[in-house]
Length: 82
Figure 1 (cartoon, rainbow, N blue to C red):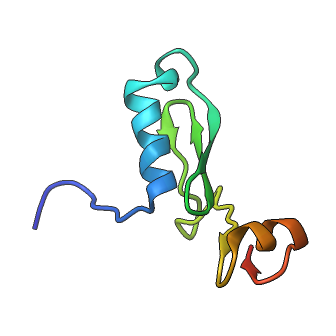
Figure 2: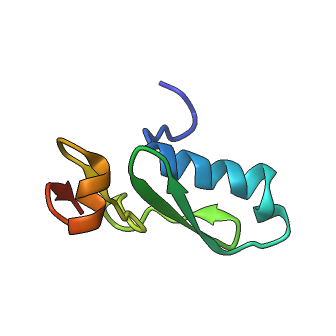
């Protein structure tokens, strides 16, 4: 056992935590981080702390192409997980 809590986060949550500790969060204690990569994700930082919420999934947004041409998915809003 370790004396601290351990969390497994997705890429957007990890990026929001990194931004809070080493980036723009040094000047802005509260912000919403949006990550655009293979999909779309986000995370909430409040008063310098990543906010996980009651179930650990707060601030989660998402847009992930499921199959086929991602460009077609984004144009027609079909075949996507949101």
